[in-house]
View (spheres, rainbow, N blue to C red):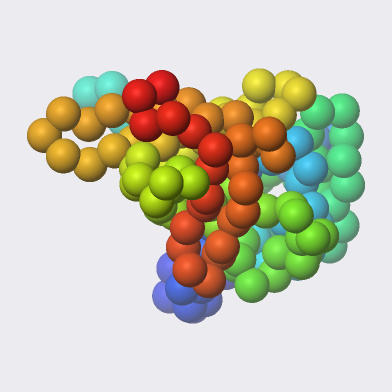
Length: 191
């Protein structure tokens, strides 16, 4: 386990991919709730960077224990709707439970390469969305998982920002240009 004095350099391309939800087993395994339905980003990196939860502690409560800045993963696998992992230097259940709530980050560069026509959500956020008439509808601020498909949350700029929810399916999305930072859609600006 690293200590604050020898903390590794934080990756410039760090992406939050999950949260530690508690201990797993008695030998120091941890349970992680991934933020993606397919947790390949967690499996693609043997170095997970941690930050404390953003939860605000009530007045008078004890501060959370100091977290290691880096977990060196020995093994990780899917387990139910989450991921379980064993990591170096976490040897018992109490040490693993102390990590509960920690935010898990991995470098974007370690993500597996997506297949043709597949995209990571983190790559879509911030892209400008324009329709076939070149009318800019706004910028992708997030995505919503609905089960059958994802929905783009597109917010327009200006004094009266407007949110549009555009299904991320071929019927509405004509093209995604990651280098150009744009998404072309078949969408009426009045909708």
